[in-house]
Length: 100
Image 1 (cartoon, rainbow, N blue to C red):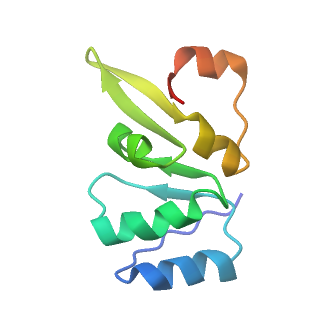
Image 2: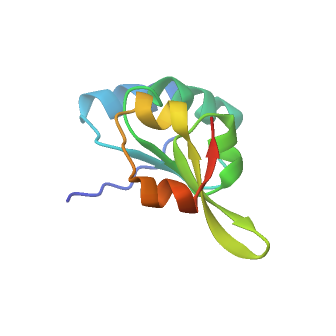
């Protein structure tokens, strides 16, 4: 598994780099800008997207981690997850908060 950290400032460059490097997945931490999120949202149906904050999943990324009752909680946007080619087991989905 090869992981490449990439800090970007230009949303269109992000889209081009993801496609040219044939990225297998994309992770966004909490605090991304609106323009960056817009660029990533266009990629969400093309590859698995992961978020460091549940709000990003609610806005259109596939999988993230949120906090409920002071405990970590997996959050899954089912339509986006499947559109991005990601498949999670029913066991994981039972543990997650699923957005349909």
